[in-house]
Amino acid sequence: MVRDRGSALRQAVAEPGTTPLVGVYDMYSASVAAGHYEAFFLSGFGFAASFYGLPDVGFIAWPDMVAFTERLRAAFPDHHLLVDIDDGYGDPEVAGHVVRRLEQAGASGVILEDQQRPRRCGHAEGKQILPLRQYLDKLDRVLDARRDLFVVARTDATEESEMLLRTKELAATETDMVLVDGVRSAAQLKLVRDAAGDKPLLFNQIGGGKSPRFSLTELTGLGVDAAIYSTPCLFAAHRAMEAALAELKASDGRLPDPSAGRDVGVAGSTELLARNLAGRRRG
Image 1 (cartoon, rainbow, N blue to C red):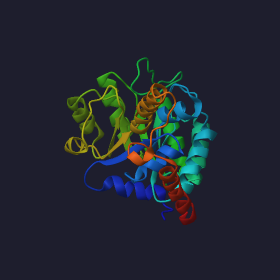
Image 2 (cartoon, one colour):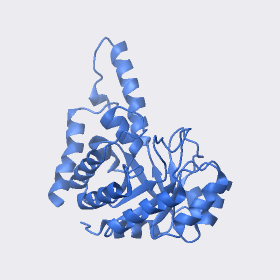
Image 3 (cartoon, rainbow, N blue to C red):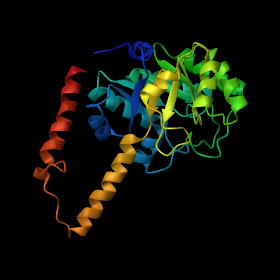
């Protein structure tokens, strides 16, 4: 059981290769993902979709994200939890308060972006960014508020010159890692890697997004230290539910037989969730 969550995540991303963090959007998706990955990304896109049924355009309230983090930590005491906190949910004072609350809740780290409201998903059109000094002031407040928390500074700049300028500025701070969201090519990622210097680099993979679909081996070759996968669980669930409900409708409401091995039944689902009880006891 790890108490120094931020230090544990720093150690993980410092190891050779690119560390994957898979996006989870609720406790059930996390229960499935825990059988495959040791690090979770609490995606704003996925959480907005799951908890509110809304797009990722700034509807998330920070107490809801803190509560989600607390539930995940209780069930998964040994997993890394990297939390998307959008723009910090407001001004620097709020951002600092949220960081303290998340660290108390058991988060390993947070990602703070430089968007201004109305914000957008990092791979959507119409993003607007804060003046650099204004963002750096907010980032400083977050860094001052943490104890051991791992902090990722993220820029949503879309113009390459501004992207590289901000990468250099963010890398010069006490942040643990830099993320440039929406990188459009391997060549552009190499420029970002150079601009970040020795600072660890994070890459965001999202289905249907603006960035190429790199393998972990390819990302390692490009100098990327960690990769977040924002939506594989969410989009897979969407696809599976559409297929299952279409099949149910076509079969005149007759459920498929789980014993055929194609579907999860009561026993399989209960067995999965029972593991969370064991996690809570360890925690």
